[in-house]
Image (cartoon, rainbow, N blue to C red):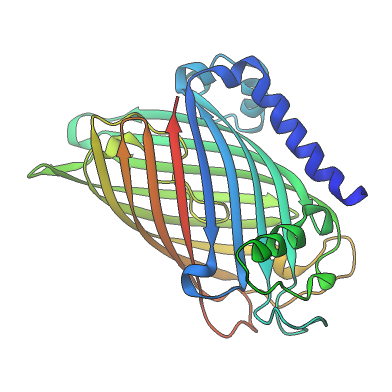
Length: 336
């Protein structure tokens, strides 16, 4: 029963935080589901789930304890316009041959990642008219566990049984238990949308870095959007290390929509799901130093609700990987 304690602990912490007074303030709840079944595969990044909450700006700035802690970690953030965020997430990674019970030396290890995240998101603006630019700074701390205690086997094989699909046989070879921590900093720039014939176009460049024993990388890229009421959000959120939009939304005036496409490039120094355990011997593969994502999709917003569909294409992540990877993402956000 020891292996279930991290899950119980993280769910308990998340539940306690959600029962505190600040979770009752206005904000946006988001559910993310990402899966590779859209490409009819079950390999590499196989599945991701995240439940998140982001406060409204005026409420987030009034929570002294978490605000002050995150400002200490990220002193450049403008806390007067701060939004606080909490997330509970789970990722699953598998090799391509899920029928083999023995270790596959030239493919990535089986692994699960169960984590809790807290973030500060500070929005500022400068300029005038068509030169006005909004900036979103994000600082996040992820704490979790990699290995059997992350319940990757139970989540994946349990879902496979539910949908009557063969279970994955090689989970005995997964990475060993290891606590994980990531420190994440990112900045997005949202330029004033160009308007024509009832439509809008904007661009959202981003730069970021992650430091931890799970991920260490620097990343950069941009998203281009076409649609209506683009100032509602910064694009739909994705599960890290994917290039993420933002969980918070401003309610739409009736129905709004936009199409989007973007790229994100990462210079990778560490990826535990390829490099293996940090402090113990484990299976590993030779990771690529540079990894690129191309993503495209569509989002619909009606009043306080947003639903978005994203298709992600990822370049090879390790030398032995035969080809690139693809997966789909769905997110549902509701502002209360």
